[in-house]
Length: 77
Image 1 (cartoon, helix red, strand yellow):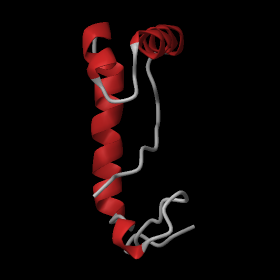
Image 2: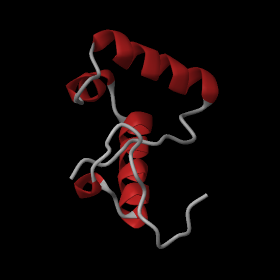
Image 3: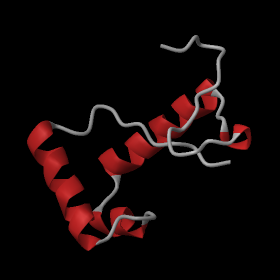
Image 4: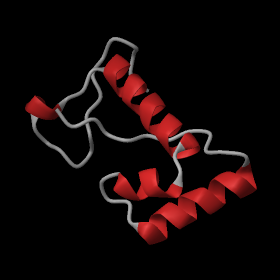
């Protein structure tokens, strides 16, 4: 496990230019989680890589599980 001050390294990116500050990663994850938990279907499908089918899956998951508790989305500089 990394220390709080260390940078995170996305496993798909093998370049120092893409290392991310842990605090920025946490803030990014919180904002995405808020969008996923509060967004209507129109907003969800407007997000990159989320089409109508994935939007419906997210919406259904939220309803059954009382929201999405955690998520990790890599920050791209």
